[in-house]
Amino acid sequence: MGSFEITKRFRFEAAHRLDGLPEGHPCGRLHGHSYRVDVKLTADRLISPGFVTDFADLAPVQKYLDTALDHRLLNDVLDIEPTSENLARHLAEWFLDNLQAGLPGRLLAVTVSETETSSAEYRVEP
Ligand SMILES: Nc1nc2c(c(=O)[nH]1)N=C([C@H](O)[C@H](O)COP(=O)(O)OP(=O)(O)OP(=O)(O)O)CN2
Ligand SMILES: [Zn+2]
Image 1 (cartoon, rainbow, N blue to C red):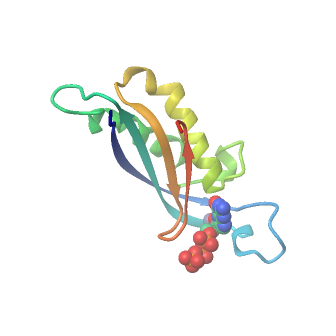
Image 2 (cartoon, rainbow, N blue to C red):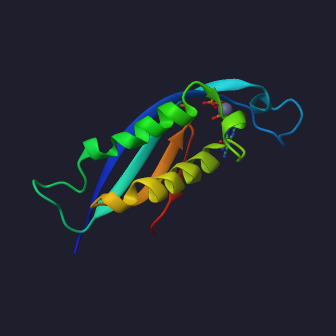
């Protein structure tokens, strides 16, 4: 049998600096991004009126981004190196710890995009 997938996009603005890069790498300098976060959920069956999960029920993700990350220096507020990969895993773990239990759909993946051409996905399910 098939399954359904939905994606909700969120945004936040933040600065970061990546440590451990070769001398002169531009991302070792303090700079900022307009981050996009795509949260993807899956379900085998729909709930009335035909939803995997109501998009509106994902609003706490934006609230977390606004409260914890928006207009902040990510190196200061996270205990991880703020690459797209690490951010995607951090946000997936936040979702599983704080939101998943109350939702009918299951988290499939979180994708973080720093630019129009670069993104990283953390996949929860195969
Ligand atoms: N695998 C990863 N590589 C890089 C990351 C990352 O999170 N994961 N991050 C950076 C920097 O943060 C950089 O700001 C973004 O990289 P890049 O896509 O190279 O940015 P550009 O603006 O130079 O992109 P172009 O579209 O090529 O101009 C670096 N690498
Ligand atoms: Zn960057």
